[in-house]
Length: 396
Ligand SMILES: Cc1cc2nc3c(=O)[nH]c(=O)nc-3n(C[C@H](O)[C@H](O)[C@H](O)COP(=O)(O)OP(=O)(O)OC[C@H]3O[C@@H](n4cnc5c(N)ncnc54)[C@H](O)[C@@H]3O)c2cc1C
Image (tube, rainbow, N blue to C red; front, side, top):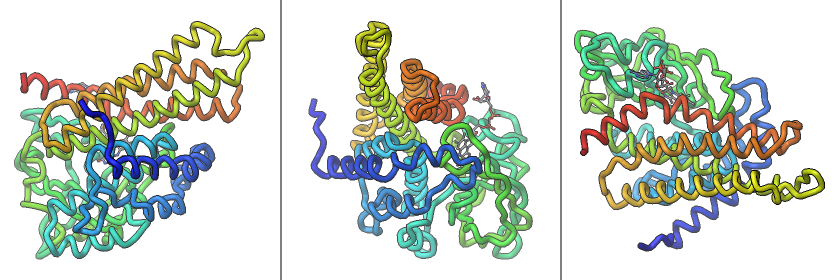
């Protein structure tokens, strides 16, 4: 089996590593410490990263992007996340949705949205599904519960949809220039048969931003509430058929696979950073006159951290390769579950090796634990594990 990378893949990996080391790392801890959650974003950094191609990487070359394959996407995300996983996510959050513009939008929509997205270094994308009373049910729809799922109401008025309701915890909710918004267009049927996707620009009349959430981890990454009061969105902004957004029942499989690989690769970057921090700590510290590296308990921890990290890397590379070869399997979801367990164990072991003296090194270790905990809410929670387990059982 050949594990080697192509020259192009290595070039992207090195570009991301350099950007992470020279631009992301120097600002990461200071950004994390800013109290106001809306002020943690660094537009200079986004602009520089965008100019290197990290915002538009997955749009095809023919359409003006870079068309990088899944193995490269995974390598780039891991390297950026080694610098700061929330900054990595800010870039990759644009990937799946820019891919969707290219794959599912009409020519008119591409002209109105893909072109400005490609041209503007600060044009980031958002995706709005979660609401105060609909979260997990959107991801694993319960059978026979008519009131579950998306409730943001959209009603037709001439050639416009009129939107009323709220979304919550939406990534880039306060900064995105364009949202893919899931809206309820038929309340007489379960939401899986009554939901439509609209392209909603941030200057839509009747749309406003509510609170920006003050998270303990991923503080650079913006999450906000979105409020719609008689907001008017042209029917020309609708993607696909009315009521058909979720008809496949479990969401779009290929989109899910991209998201799983994205989050697993990001977690791997955190694990790499944790291993690096732990190695630096044991070299630099003395305990009872001996270097920390001579303590057998510490050696065992370092061994375990590296074993888990390398096992995760091998699994992620296999998933990325499978995506590029169009091999269908359940490995993406399983790798993401493994990533959740791995990132949390590895960051805790790193924290164990550090002490609590509050120096920059300990604050950096603490940040990795807080960032790694995000996976419990986002990627490796019970509902996500049930969803993956269901797929495995159906495929057996
Ligand atoms: C960093 C971050 C970024 C996000 N970005 C976005 C975004 O861009 N767009 C968007 O739409 N949403 C976003 N979300 C929201 C996210 O999708 C929801 O938080 C998630 O779907 C869970 O919904 P909830 O928070 O309402 O939890 P709930 O649905 O209330 O679930 C709470 C807990 O109960 C568990 N649970 C629920 N049902 C069951 C069951 N049947 N059996 C066992 N356990 C169950 C869940 O696993 C979870 O642990 C983001 C969240 C985070 C943390």
